[in-house]
Length: 321
Length: 294
Image 1 (cartoon, one colour):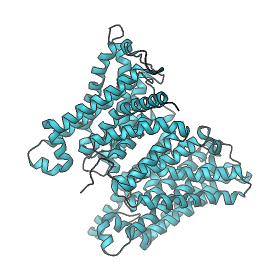
Image 2: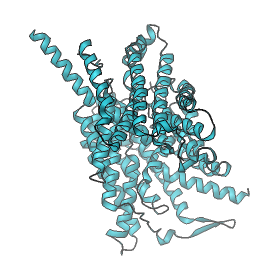
Image 3: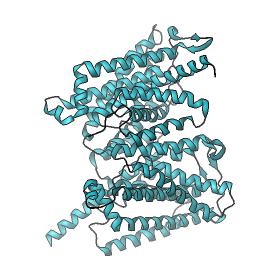
Image 4: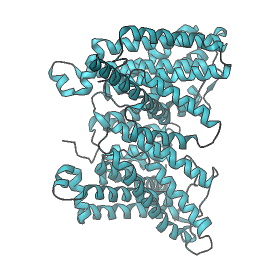
């Protein structure tokens, strides 16, 4: 399978990382506040999609309900901040932790099913989360959402938030990258390729899948919490299946077999959303057509295509030498 | 609660159930035969509803019985549209993973709902109930709309018709054979792609019919497809993916749980059906009436 930078040497990887980090560090100096908030949204969506992709691309578990976890993260932080006097750090941490705990319970049932049944069960659970958020008016404010979550002053400035967001997302991405490169990550890929064979060499497939489910939920929770802190509002449609599908589209757009695929996907998705919405009301039409064209003519997504080209080039170079 | 009240509530549940059955059964047929989770099913239902509005109010507003014409023409148009989509797009992705199919049909949702918005705008478009069916019956003193009785009858007749088709015609035999083993059916000389197109068009026709029948009780409006789609999914999963009787049973469970759940917990009534879906998926993933995959 193709992996991140599979065709590149360690030196080139480090160079690419340094360039990326410097780029994001100095970026706010050159762009307006509107663009900074767009970059923040891109990064948060990337984290959510990368978390989802751990399940989707690496473990081969197609989930239709990632938005449920995203919303639980966002709502937990919002509710803790609104209803209690706990410090911000605790509220921030409680989102992902609760999401992970919930993912343990939900995942325990889900990993016992395979293929389409797994996907449908995740969809059902996320719809339950949606219904509860939507229907439990006295606790979650239902349809109205929670508006004006009290965020500490130091994060109210968009520049401060940008760096705060960047640190968290860089940390999470690094962690995800380590997971994928670890023996655990390799085992996941083995399970994806052939679950029966993985089982027969002594891998506890369910336990691995559950761990992936929980990790994926954790990162979706972090993304939800970050978005809540950023926008200071939370709405029930964070848990809607359309949000889940948006994340799936982002993964596909970028390419699910490449680690940085969701980042590319998120960038293109948000950018197109902002750019095309400025010109026409019919942005879904453009998005739908793009998805169809991608599915039919560019399998493996944009990042997948680029990664393929790079490794092809490396191979031909080697042959020439 | 009094007995007449319970009966009225039961009838309410049944009319919701039969309306959504028409959509769910198409979804189930398409999944069973083509192995595709068709997210675009909701949008086809919406297309049927809008076509019904268009035919009754724009195309043939002055002809007596324009509603009946719309029932005839609307679903057929939806079926033809579905056929074109199947031949041009879906055919290319049958061998792909579920995720690709999910996303392709999702792209269709985006495109078709935008085209509908383009053609008919974002206003609510009411469709009048035909005069014959306007008014109410009285059950022990409590009124119940005639039109909802008509909906219940339509659902039951469709079920009987489909059962006849599946169990007593050649096409039905082929569909059942394909549910069992697609490769073997193909090896026996059945033109599988052609049957796929026919089944997909049949599913679309049912979705269009559902749209045209339900639209007089609500109004044609953007976004009407979203809830219906997810509800049909729930029904199909509870009944069993690909099972005709399962869709019927699932729809009835759905309708009744909704009708009586609202009396118990109005705001969380929707959650009950998802809980049933989860329980079914955990205990019998293949659904109440479905068969386990081999």
